[in-house]
Image 1 (cartoon, rainbow, N blue to C red):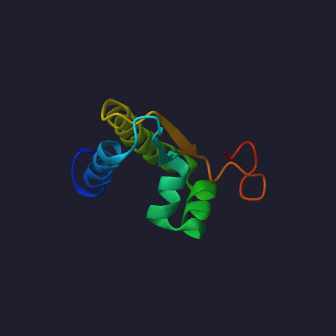
Image 2: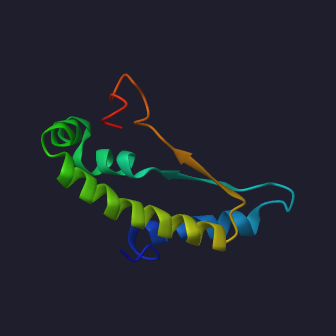
Image 3: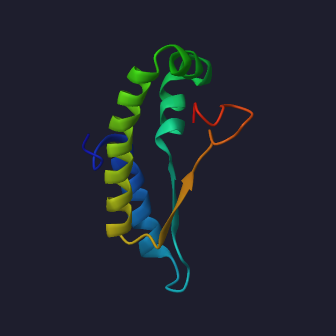
Length: 102
């Protein structure tokens, strides 16, 4: 996926504006959601849980593709000048998944 286009491209444009307008001593930390959170936003929480439990191999394949996108985007965010990344791990909770599921 080309992470310089679409919603990712819009986020990069916003990042550039923030970096341009900030004071030089103010760090810019950019939030990126981990692949499991990305999958939940795309499919919905309940659908993801059902598919994760019924079709783990297919979900794993999708998560690998999302991981490639996430990794590419993170590299570009740092290259654009962000000082760091906050990786949101929304699904890393025993209330949502067992350790094996995660």
